[in-house]
Length: 325
Ligand code: ACO
View (cartoon, protein in one colour):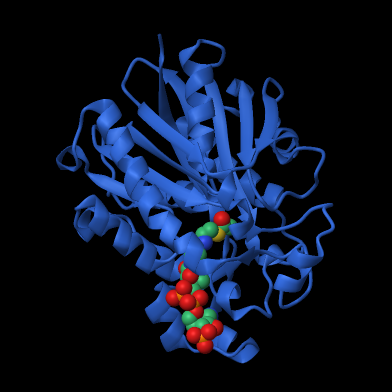
C-alpha cells in the first residue's frame, strides 16, 4: 500500500491590507479591543473582481511547482470553500481548466474552516487504496465578500487567502493519520444562507443580508478549544505518540485566545505552535495550508519532523492530521 505524502505546498495572499484603524472608521471598535480579544492586527482582502477560483489557481500553481510535477500529472483536484464563485460548476472544475489539468477529476467539498483536514483525509483514502497518484487539495475563501461589515463582532475577524498542497503516492511516511468529526446540533452557531428563507436568521444579522456570516462567537469559542485539543490528542493516540514527538502544531488561526486556551489544554508551550493570525486574521479553510506553506518556507518544518495540523469550523466540524514531513 502506498503512503500519502504532501510533496508540494503553495499559497496566495491578496495584496490589499485592512488594519484595525480601518475598522475604527466603520464600526464602534478600537485597536486595543481587537488586539486584546483576538490578537488580530491586519487581514488581507481580495480585490472586487478577485474570486475564490482565481486565488485557488494561484496557490495551486505554486504547490504544483513545489511538488516538481506538471498539472497533467494530477489525477484529482478537490477544493474546500464556503465562498464559491458558483453553486455549479464546482470551483475545482474551474481551477482544473485554469491549470490545464486535463487528466484530473474535480469536485468541491465544504467543512468550513476544517476544510484542509477534510481534504487531506479524502486524498489519503484515494492514494492508499491505489486509485490515484497525485491529488491537489486546495482551500480558498473570499470571506471578505461574505462579511457583514456592519457587525463589529465578526467583521474584525476575517481575511482572504488560498492554500494548496499536492498529496502524492510515496514510499516515505507522510500523512500518518487524520481524525475528522462533526456536531450538527451546533449547526446554527455559524451560518451563511443560500436559498433557505429564514426570518429568524435574517433578523440576527445587523445588515439583514442573509448571504453574510453570522456567528454566536462565545459558543463557537468554547467549542473550538475543546475540539482542537481533543482532535490533536486523538491523532497522537492513533499513532502511539505524545507531544514530545511533535516538532510543530499548526492550528486554525481564528483568535489568539482560542489558540492560547487550546495549547494550554494540550499542555504544550507556544514555541511549538505556528501563529500568524496577527497579520492575516481568520481566512477560513485556507488558514492551515497557507500557514503550512509559510512554516515550510521559514524552515520551521524540516524533513523528518512530525507535525500536527488542527482546526475547527462551521458545521460544527473539527479535525486534525498528523504528518511526517
Ligand atoms: N469592538 C468592541 N467591542 C466589541 C466588538 C468589537 N469589535 N465586538 C464585540 N464587542 C462587544 C460586545 O458587543 C460585547 O459588549 P456588551 O458586553 O456590552 O454586550 C462585548 O464586546 C463582549 O462580547 P463577546 O461576544 O462576549 O466577546 P468575546 O470575548 O466572545 O469576543 C469574538 C468576540 C472575538 C467574536 C470571539 O467570541 C471569537 O473569536 N469567537 C470565535 C470566532 C471563531 O473563531 N469562529 C471560527 C469559525 S469562522 C468560520 O468557520 C468561517
